[in-house]
Structure formats: structure tokens, C-alpha cells
Length: 330
Image (tube, rainbow, N blue to C red; front, side):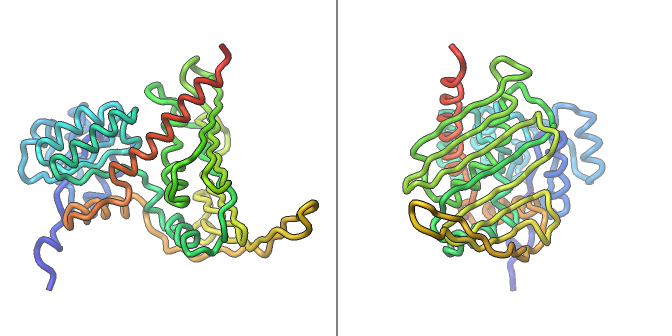
């Protein structure tokens, strides 16, 4: 028979109850793990707390409450390090929305604090918990696509323009997290270019190119100034190609196309078979992500997207930012 510790989930407080934070509140309420809400707008916190029958606390009160085992940050990334170190020192486990921080130095400091206090630190790279991506990852790891040749990811929308981070830092962490998980290696080369349409130093659209050992190439396009929403990951291998398109219905979110290179070396041709939609069990990625965080707190397991995984994403973003700056006219 399962013990009480296995049936009662850890209790968390969600810090930051804006548009995305409300989704965390809803999911933790549905999982039975919501203990409190925290927001710098008191009226918003009280309204949301009343809707879910939990108290609206100050940040200091949440840290002091022994029934709160963990905090979920849905905050601007600049707040993750200063508030996160405070939370970890208070003995709380910590989930932070991506990116982990706005520099490798800050991200490493947060990881070191979590390790020093023996607390779980998890980063919100939500697409690593998407059922379609998990199915794609299994295909790649099982060798169904053959040797990987290229990966192209697009994350485009006409959306909220940021001023704390550019389009690459706001959007590309999702794609980098997926690509690094599929490839299992750091890029040997990083190049980037971008468009600065609404601010001279904050790119609204970026194009990131990665070169990996063995010849694999990856591209990531990110923009919040695009009229058509796209959320697509295309993986090309020597034996098959796979497309994970999150804009498609569940029955077509993941499509596999057999392929091969034919002909002589001097005149090769690419041949493709019939695209095959693969069955994917529907499920809200955020709920899976929240449940994974709770499981890691309960068991002491390392999260799939732990602080060190987030640090690897930050390292690539920093290299890309340097390349982006170098590409600007002098």
C-alpha cells in the first residue's frame, strides 16, 4: 500500500500570478499541491487565492511558512537569482520559468545555491514534457531517423514585445532545450543574426545557427513580429524525417516521413515516402511538467530540466548573443 508521502503531494506557492503564472496556479490546484499565491499586485493575489481557496501571502510570509515546501517562479528572469537564492536558503525547492537567468554567471550561482542547500531546482523548458516531443525523442534515440543531418525549429508569433530580453532569449530557450536533448552534445559553432525593428539594441527577430560535431546543423528562428503563428520542429535524418508541429491537432502533431539519399555522389537525389502521423497520447505539457517537479521533490530525483540543463541552454544563448552583437554594423 502506498504511504501517505506518496499520496499527498508537496505543497507549493506560485510566485507571480500574471498570464502564465495563472496557468501554474490552475495546474497545482488541480494536482492538489497549491498552498498559496504570491504577487506584487495584492488585489490580483487575493482574487486568485480566493478562487482556489488558498491564502495570498507576501514573499516573506511564503518563505517563513513551514507548510510551503517549494516555490514556483513565473517572474521576469532577472528576478530568478536574487529571489531564488533567498528561497533556496530558506529550504524551499524551486521551479523557475525559462530562462534560468540572464547570464551564465547568474545561472551558475543559482545552481550552486540549490546544490549547497540540497534542494531541487527545475527550469520551465515545457516542451521537454510535451507528449509529441517525448515520442520524437524516443524515435531519435532508438535510431529510427538514422544519423541526424539537420534540425530546424521555428517559434514565430505576433506577440508581446519585451524590453528585458530579446526575441532569442524570450523564445529560443524552448527550442535549444529540445535540440540539445535530441543531439546530446554542445554545439561546436554558434552564429546568429537578427532584426532590430522596435529598439536599437533588442532584437525582435533572430536566426540562430548551430554546428555540432559530426556535421549536424541546427537552425532556430524566433520572432514576435510575425503575422502567422508557427511552432514547428523539423528533424532530418538519413533514414527518415520527423515534424513536430504544435499548431496541428493531436492526431497530426508528430508526422514521420521515410526518406533516403539516392543516386551517385555527383548527382544525389532525396527521396521521401508517405508521411505517417504517429499516435500521441494527448496531455497538457504544463501539467506533466508540474507533476514531474512534485515527483522530484518527493523522491529526491534529478529533474529532466534541472538547473544544470538550464545552464547548458544559457551557455548557448550567451554565445549566440555575442555573435548577434558582432553581426551588427559598426
